[in-house]
Image (cartoon, rainbow over all chains, first blue to last red; front, side):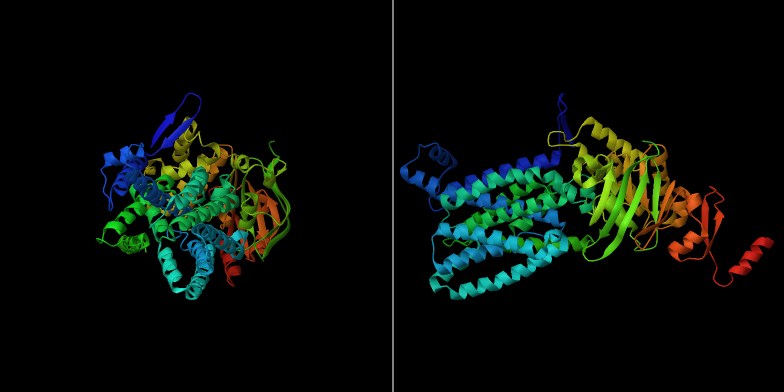
Length: 341
Length: 275
């Protein structure tokens, strides 16, 4: 623990290890970003990228960097960070390491919204809006079913799983109703993909992230108190019920915004907070480290998805699903070896 | 305020979603007392404590802290006056004792006041007072039951509240650790001048350590007062449905409940007299 105190009575405290993880995470994200913007069918050196960014590139280079690669990069980083923050908040609030917006049916709700637009026909903007609306609607549905006092623990998880199962059924039905071409497009969206993402998708996502990240970070201290149990947190002066509703609502919006931009990319929300905690070795929600891990994870997965098989692009959701699933199995095995389950 | 009361409940109706636990319950916690609430299982004693600690909102009636409705007071201000060791406390994975105790400082901290010298001093003092200073760097989940309970009490102490509520602090502990925790509570009361309220199962412990006893049954207060006057054979019979004799605790002179031996009680009684 490092403490900084000023004569005015201000004091800040942080863990050296968490700070180091944050710095390394930022470095990793920057490195991956350079690779992402510089690589592809038209390779560019980092110097070229920098020149283009400062407005000195050729028109073709300017178009490739500003209109193709940067928005895709921004979507990957934004969706990764948003999903990871949502996952960290949900895991912390539920005191359940397997909690995530996927498990609660939020991303399925977003998918339902998007599929309705696919079936009914509509622009990609309408699809994004419908995805956010779907995610928020399923969040409200879960709250209505669980009740105001049921937003804690197992009850919320069980209600969420129920809602998710119902929405999966609805989504399947919607897919059978869609014309074949649209159904193919819908399945690609459902897998989670960053192909062809422009500023129309990246812009709103970054705006939501910029607005909600401070809310989550400000709630961080209350979150680590709620981890001690509702009664302890109340006794310590945290208005538990209000904080829980506010932060769950924020997590729903973050997950829905990420799904609207990149599709319901699986496992990032679940895995990133776990990885962050292993790296920082700090108890509590590890919000900043989680966000950085999520951003790095999704960007790295997208790089793999674009370049793993020559001449063929995979949807990023395939990679995160495979990596995340493998990580989960490894985690279970490690926990079993440690005698925890 | 000596002899007065800072904390109490007036005409409380306490209920969980469908089950009403108590109606028309009125209690006072005398200032600077070590108050112990006893009663059989499901008599509402823990529910009462939760209401006093404002973790359970009464359906009717008011919990008063310093003369005002506790739910109308800012939650941070209450948290600087009244601390709680709940039954349901869970330690996050891998948290160390020092980290746990530090979380008790929450109501004194802020975004720009994360770790003052005062925080540091109080956390160190709380760990010293509960004898967990040597365990500061150890993860809580590796501690023994008694050590863990002392770490949690240290967290509640770090909150620095004049009133401290403990919900069954000795449950799950072996006899030596039970006494250790009770001695600690008694010290907090006598040396640090705190008002301590604890829910206990063991009538003997209650009679020995309490300065004020509240005996409950079926959501009602059957008797309240000095344990030496309150703990009688008739009361134990009424509250617990247990026939017993009361003798003097040879160590402390406090009432000691000796359950009657079934059937052969008379014979024992005679043997006792003869001896």
